Length: 133
Image (cartoon, rainbow, N blue to C red; front, top):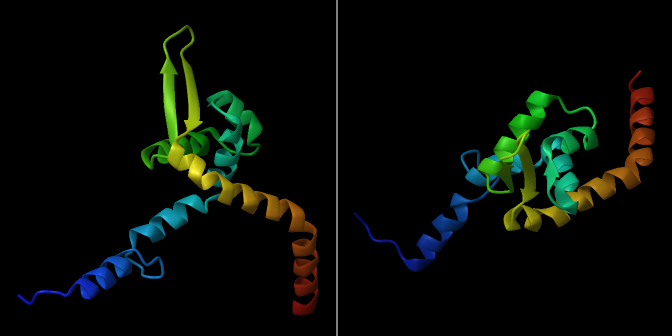
C-alpha cells in the first residue's frame, strides 16, 4: 500500500466534498436546502420560535404532510430544534439552531431576489413562450 503525500491527502479531502461530483454528500445538502419549503420555513423562523400552527398559516400552500416532513428533515440536519412543552394541549415550538441561523442570510437573499425580480422573470417567460410558437 503506497503512502500518500500531504498534498495528495488534501486533494482527496477537497474532492470528497465537491458538489459537482454525483456521490458528494454536499450535493445532497444542496438538494435539501434548495427545496422551496425549506427556504420558506427557514425564512419564517427568522423572527424566533414558532408553533406548528403558526408556521402552517404563515407558509401558505404547504400541506400538513409536507410541513411535518420538512420540519423533521430540518431537525435531523441540525438546522431546527423542536421543543415540546408539556401542557394541555401539548405545545411544540420550532426554532433555528446556530447552524440554521448561519444559513439564514443566504435564503433571505434568495427570497428577496425572487420578490424583486419576479416581474422580469415573468416577462422573460412570456417572451420565450411567444417565440416558441
